[in-house]
Length: 470
Picture: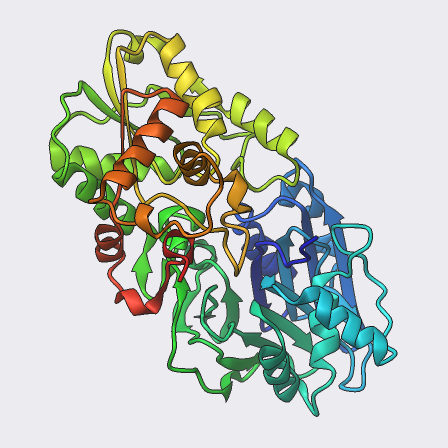
């Protein structure tokens, strides 16, 4: 069984006086990334105050609205994650708290190694027999002669990725994973400092971006400002899926805005399409902007035959169980029959992972509402490989493209290189099979080259493993 750090959103703040309100609000702006647990830690001269809640289907701000008011200190870190974080340790390096984001592929091996060294663990992970990943990272850091040395040693020990925030009496250490797969950004507000996973946490709190951390870079922020402790590496492999689906529209990664990338993706889809349709629509939320881009380029009306009930239903991929994911997918989208009946609809979506939610809880609603045709356009290539750095995609057998290949080949195959080229006959047969499975009039995917061009970074600086396996 795999043990891993689930996708997390992290925020830290150092203020002139109390930081708790800034910390509370900044952390809340990461609610789109996870729904498992939320945690806040503040530091003052008497020690650290920590609060963790299991969120389930509850909003972060509802759980922590009363707690944060009681937390004292001018510095703190917060996280929303799939596991209980932040972790607190009294250690040979002094007391500290840490929260993490990423996935540790060799989690089980590292735990066994530490057990053999006599290390004990106090926090359980998301599975009863597992160790909390944030505590594993914390224990690895304590092997160093200081926090920076410990973080660097941890980077060299783990397989996968791990970005982190570490709170101590010296300030907040922010460290981005060695390949820069997940982002960390420093902001400043009138002499106060913050660090965030998502830059969308900054504008309403008055922070301005001062630095995008580079891969493997470690900085310390304190009351005096920002200090580089370990310089960035030269190899960047940031997750391309951040722009396509995971990221919030108002966020920037490497200085490139998510919303504008999604518009460009939609425009690229429209440039290579000639289907006759009555309207363009998107699957809320991330698919909406891809659809806006398609409508801009095609000059066909953008309409909303499906609207999301935003007050209580978030993303369907973040909840921990399939049952909850299915319920959210079923309940969150409400069809508008007046915009659907007898219409030829082009529906943009960010991706197809399993395809079951798209088929059963999105397309079925449009068909029942009287759609004449439904043409689906996907903003990225077919997902072929599970993510090795986070939980953007899961196991191979769950992927719709792999299921289609299994049907076509009569068995599951390891080498799928013949299905990666969009200009081959096998690729088209795979797409046709997926279209048949999800029951749509037509289906087209974005090409890898067009997606990379829409993002605007060189291909070598992007992690494209989910699509290429490399």
